[in-house]
Length: 356
Ligand SMILES: *Cc1c(COP(=O)(O)O)cnc(C)c1O
Image (cartoon, rainbow, N blue to C red; front, side, top):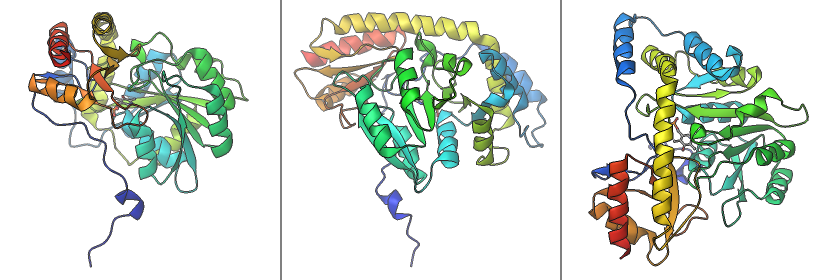
């Protein structure tokens, strides 16, 4: 007899984006721009000096130190992992598990609930309003009913696009009984950040943990590096569930050196924000509903056609976007990542042709 996998895993389908060979890939919210050439040169030289026969720095000291300086926090407040998804997994391994519950508000980033379920954690699901905003009465109801050990917010929210106003995050922190995890994968695209909360936390509020990634704004999705900023006890809890030497030496250098190119990152973000405005404006003259975005993607819903017809029409024109129409609360919706000006033009032309 072959061993059976955990019965609760059999109900889960993986989280994957479509793999289609196209010229314009606007489906996974990566940066369309590579990291700076000077960073590449520095990294190559640094890698040549590494003792790769030795295990990497287990405490990730240099990278955590630089990240702490970058955010003006103590090194004990920073935990790094292989992408922010692994940060989320560490949080769930440390604080979740059987008999424990976390809360999410749909539509939101699918992996919060997905990784929770993989770790055997129950998921309490609240609903956002029709325009995808958080409804504080609904938040209060879900948190009171489920008493979650962690409440997840995503700001800006993937895939709907808006950043949560600081007052809303403050209000959720006042209601949440455990940790408040704010996933800021797109943080630098927005004007607000929950990192501000860390400086003036009230003891009666939920403890705030902010999760960030190098995958989007830093143009380093291929490197797989993410981190959290939060209280030292959360960092220690995450370290306790982390495999020894999980963060390789090359990645530690890559992240450390990237922080020397913060101005270049901010310039790429500014360009994408400008392009986002241009794409959003063009949506205004097309038969689609859209929602305002504080990130590098825009959610839209064709008014006169199904999402899959438009998705297929775009693929025929070699443009790939994300079909979100089967996600909770997003029927008929597609999500487009903001690309280079040329890619955005290709997308807009193709979309116009599909909608005619
Ligand atoms: C893209 C994304 C991430 C990034 O995950 P990595 O593992 O760091 O690549 C995390 N959270 C959200 C909401 C995202 O959209």
